[in-house]
Amino acid sequence: MSTLFVDTINEKTTNNGVYIPGHVLQVVSASTGNNVSTTSTSFVTSNLTATITPSSTSSKILILLNAAMYNSTNSVHAVATVFRGTVSGTNLGHSDAGFGTSYADNALTKNNISANYLDSPSTTSATTYTVGIKTINSGTAIFSVNGETSVLTLMEIGA
Image 1 (cartoon, rainbow, N blue to C red):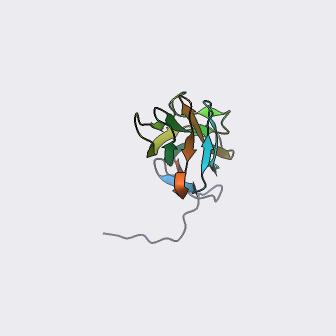
Image 2: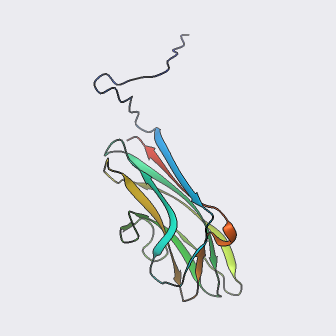
Image 3: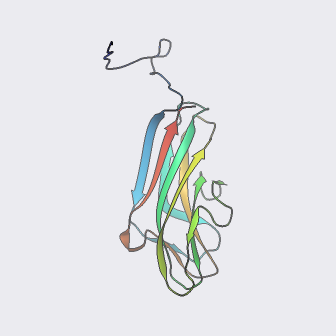
């Protein structure tokens, strides 16, 4: 059996490295423990964004979200989603329920909303992903409540 040891593999024509489909090419992560609240029933920007620059238009971006959410009033949904771009951009979750809600009938509730989504931005330009929050049924939705950390991770997957 032979073993190959290398420090770097460079592509013959551009010297940019070797592109391997199906592999993680880069990872970008952002986190915050700063609380943001809203009474809006339309999505507003949280304080959590991350930007990634895909190396190929065929690359996929695997989005991993863990959002600490709190609904401050009975029978209220605190909702979190991810937008490509700003909150006026493309909502990657459900148009109303996003990627999940924190909800309780008879008690105030804190939940972590976790999601993963494989996006196809079809660009090699810097692409920003923004966490949006809102409430359903009047009340207050709070993001990163009590200083709990919320995390947004972006992974470029070669295709």
